[in-house]
Image (cartoon, rainbow, N blue to C red; front, side):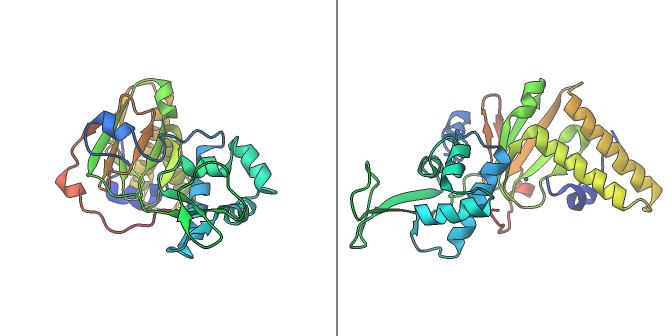
Length: 267
């Protein structure tokens, strides 16, 4: 199919974007995507999570006040105020935080003590949160057989150290070591676009390599046409990648050569 070797596509297509051990049932029952039911785009959800985690990095050991921190975040994201932001979420920011396993909510009393969140706040109480890093899980390989057009719109959360492979093309993407939440369609489309942009800015490269990259761009485009079945494979040393819906996802053991993982940024 004229695909590029992995080492040549790493730089050009790299910017492409909690689960218990056990089988498919265990892995689909926990995590970021499981209870996330908001109407904003997947990219916006990713931006919101990144922004909240970035704000918290300034004071990693402290509990942060939900309302002022989330207002600052909403303004940074381009919303007029918190009400407009919650309108976009079709729900409260508190509900959004509750749905994500890396955010822990508590009630802070006037005397500075903390208690579990139970019902409406009483006078003098404030709602606070902090980020708790998701624990790493067993290394895993997951694969989705792409046979129908609907399969393209399955949501995928790529863990920072995970790599996506399309074995039919001997092609890998997601080597940027960043978390990303998007549809499978957009993962492939972004990889194609990145290679296309690389072509346009490097027209004087060696003709053979130029032709190989062009063939890879065309092959990625054909994948999205769904004329023939193909496979979306995830190699994840941290075990934190997720799919939604999870049905039809095949789980296997990660190859030893892919289990080593270096520290990466979560966003």
